[in-house]
Length: 244
Image (cartoon, rainbow, N blue to C red; front, side, top):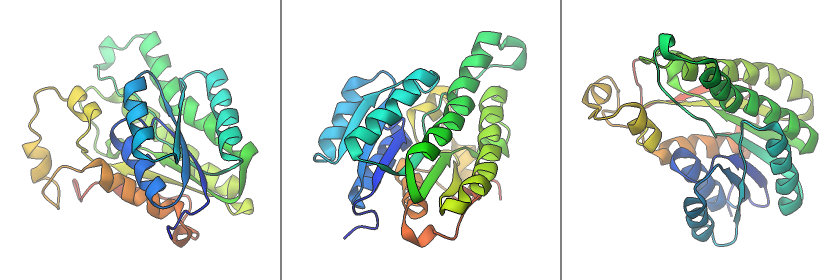
């Protein structure tokens, strides 16, 4: 038996990278998972196939609140309820402040901050008592990245939302926490750092390697399970000891 047997889970952004690892890990723990994807239908289909009927893919744009609400309604229909929300979907364009346009600012904040904020609100409407909300942030709110003002600021907002939501939802036994990955070997990391070998990052990491998506998924699985019922309002830095 898994720690999440019979649990209904929604993961945003579950077709690639950390999101994909989260979906497959939670399914392995016994959950049934609905996950969203933005564009890559083939990648989403691969995840569904790997989960043997325990995962369902729904195309949705987290920056569009109408689409976000439709995602929740479809997830509840497919799952028969909701026990766990993982807010993972995000974008991470890099640009110096002098090159950021109002359109770029709005898009990043819509996807990375506004979308998860209202996802928590929708979860509050649909989630059963004693549920779990897990938001994926980043250590870049502490270790400021070059040209990463928008990404870091949007995730900083998400961390604050997490603390307030933990207080507001706590009366129903719903825990709300953040997981903040360090340098994790995903396409987003490589896209944001073209050509980087990450040797310096590894050198500054206590465990002397890049993180893998499964490393982050393991922490999410812990927070989603029964052993984390007394953990809420926290930000767990799953970084392998980056910049201690």
